[in-house]
Amino acid sequence: MPQNLERRYVNTTLELRDDDAEPIVSGYAARFNELSEELWGFREIILPGAFADALKAPDIRALFNHDPSQIVARTKNNTLKVWEDEKGLRYEFQPNMKTAAGRDLVELLRRGDVDQSSFAFSMEGGIEEWDDSGDIPIRKLIKIPRLYDVSPVTYPAYPSTSVGVRSAQDVYEEHKAQREKQERQEAERRIKEARIKVKMLRRKAELEYKKEVF
Image (cartoon, rainbow, N blue to C red; front, top):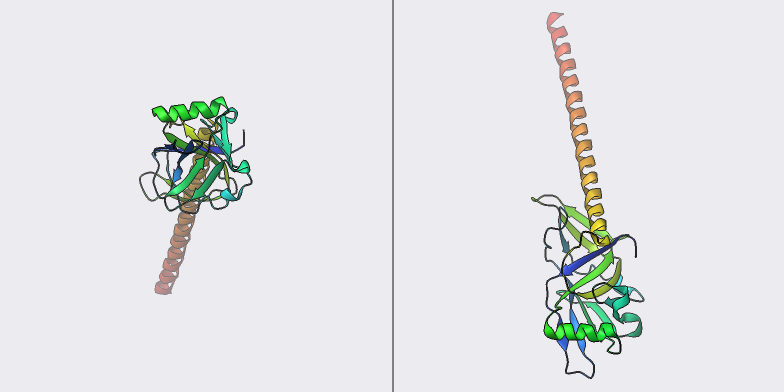
């Protein structure tokens, strides 16, 4: 399992085309400029172009439910295409119908049992910003350096045991600790400035008193 891996889910319908020689699955793994639901004390938004570097990777996989044993396509052998458009991160693949994973996925899509998407990524070495001006912090993902897989999923949820939850919680806790540190430093700076100002006023008052006396 890659370190610092995170997972996100998008509430958008997957498409299955059966009119081709082989079934084609397509959909969005991520949407731009849309605030997520509250995650672990923060909300998140992905900016357009965030995946530009990640898409240069030599291989990205399509997995069913993020399960490495349920691989259904990959960019390395041209059975998976992943790209950005104006709406978000879009993908399209031909599932391997000679495998149980491929056949099961297609049947589940036909019945509507599976209809949502997810992607696995890492922000290590990426670019993000935090906006603390509102009631809840907003994490803005500007550059996502690593995209591991796109995945049709059964449950669009965040299991408490997943690596992605621990990683995202760590990200937020680090941001929270940094913000609190900056707030403490700012408070200490203001106190120091106030003390210097009081000291200067006292010194000025003493000088004025001496002038009046002498």
